[in-house]
Image (cartoon, rainbow, N blue to C red; front, side, top):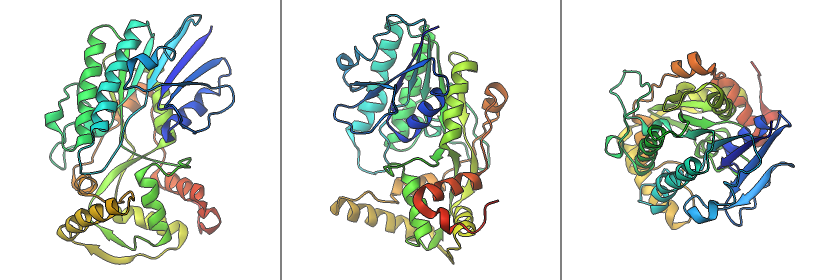
Length: 337
């Protein structure tokens, strides 16, 4: 059987891990949508088609599916930002781009679709309530431009499910893991800054972090076992910032000051730091929005994905070790549990 996998966002950190798993079956034909001029390399045998999810006309070749017995679409493409300033690209890519992709998937008869959303799309519950899946999404019920765009896109995707598209949604938490060669992931840069000593003190708050390899496996499991119109949280393990730093310290021997910066000081520093970074044309590590995320309720349950998909995330220690090794700290790691 000739099976075609269509992947948007396939040149990104998560996309490369999805491709790696799909290539284990040599009968799979993999076609990746890449932005025009994107220099990111793809493995041998993976078809590259240039196009932009924001331009429906440019997607025609990507959705040419004649001659295949089965077509699966993984829609990973997204514009991710922690910036405070409104950026129209966030809505254009995450919402309008998703609209274009879902419309063409329905029109061309794609058999199966998995849309990669985010836990940010799910309305927050008061702590310590555990957040589980929902099928009610609204941009008004979440905070921040990225979260609003992902909530609106999830609402849109479920509308296509109601129209007959065989689409499921997965909601990863904070993705970290090896293989981020371009350091495009905010947390890759943060872990590197901690390991190098550029962030020597801790702040309050924390988040749920999940290994990129587990998310990739969860996406593929969702294709096989997920149900149309259903959502699945792909979370990992909650960790405070101090707890994350202790894990890094245990591997590298890097000592951190036992000092916590008060929240009001961090808010002011994040605001000024973002402004200063923009002047220097650098990507800030902390912004008011990223701090809001650290202070929010990040207790997510992946019970549904575990029970229905067989999803099982690895330990956070294993993930952090892999990130440090990929950043060149392999020889400095003191202890491997």
